[in-house]
Amino acid sequence: MIKLFSLKQQKKDEESAGGARAGAGGKKASAAQLRIQKDINELNLPKTCEMVFPDPDDLLNFKLIISPDEVGQGYPHDPPKVKCETMVYHPNIDLEGNVCLNILREDWKPVLTINSIIYGLQYLFLEPNPEDPLNKEAAEVLQTNRRLFEQNVQRSLRGGYVGATYFERCLK
Image 1: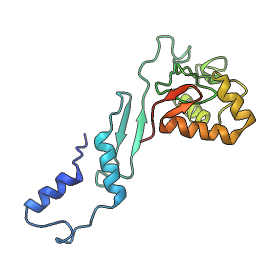
Image 2: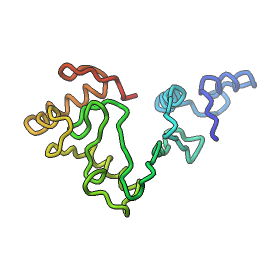
Image 3: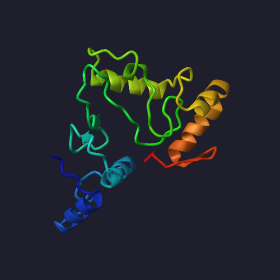
């Protein structure tokens, strides 16, 4: 388990030990380091997510591990149930979090793995499919006005209304 200390507390400890960071030849923390430390201190990951720091002294490089919360008893013969807990503006994810991904339905095969699903979800976020929508309004906007669609996605991620629907901020 990695223990993360705030840079402010670390600086205070060093000063009380007899030398300021910069005066003792130490490096000053960059704006990026200060910000990532603040973000990490405020982070509240769900139990299915874990942050791993290969180098505990380098907080700017980390891995985010996402694990399934529950896999049904029928797995691998039946696909796992996948739900997006954060409301997003996406043609293939409805406002209740249901996900439309072919390998979670008709194209599921027992040979597919959780890894396949994660890559499928990642691809779905990078390349939404307006031909098989759950959110028909988002799909229509994507097909008719991609620039407006991108603006709506940004507005929803930053927190705000898209049409009559309010999206909570999910960008840090």
